[in-house]
Amino acid sequence: MKAVTLLLVLLLTACASGPTYHYRGGEMIPGRLISLADGTLLPMQLELSTGSGRITAFNPVTNEKFSGNYTAVSEDKYIQYSKPSFWGSENTVQAVEMSSSVPATAIIVGDQGTVINIRIRIRPGNAHVLPIGYGDAEDNKGVKYNFQF
Image 1 (tube, rainbow, N blue to C red):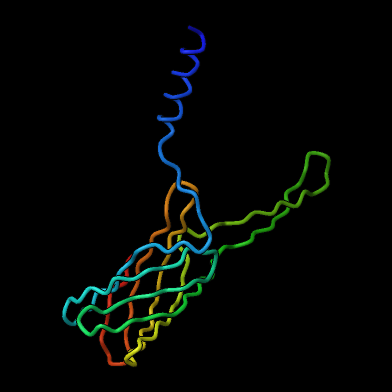
Image 2 (cartoon, rainbow, N blue to C red; image 1 turned 135 degrees about the vertical axis):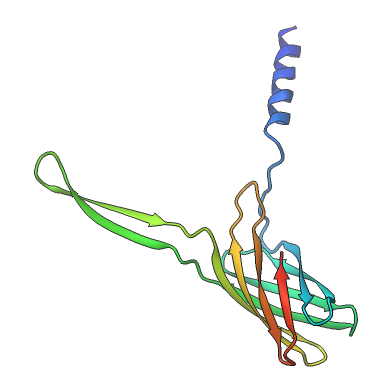
């Protein structure tokens, strides 16, 4: 009886914790570019990474395939200050103020000559949540896009 009770408690505890996302290096997540000129949706894939990765996209109207890379640089602030201690000396404290979103830029090049410059804001993910991002893009022909993942 004790074994059944213990098994039931373990099972309920595991179910209550919910799903956990585990990062796997090189994993591609879905995103999209939306043309503001005509509403064409370009499905894309973005590589999960810690600062730079691959991007691929496809234009279903022109059959153009895109590939390129993005780079993100965190805007974290490093803070150092001194505070007096009870004994008259000073203690130096260091802290990092983490940014809630990270700026990034990407260039993707199509096999028919279209080049798209993308400006991105990324909200980093964690062990339980995938990152999300949004931004603006413009190609070498003047077409503007909305970027989402």
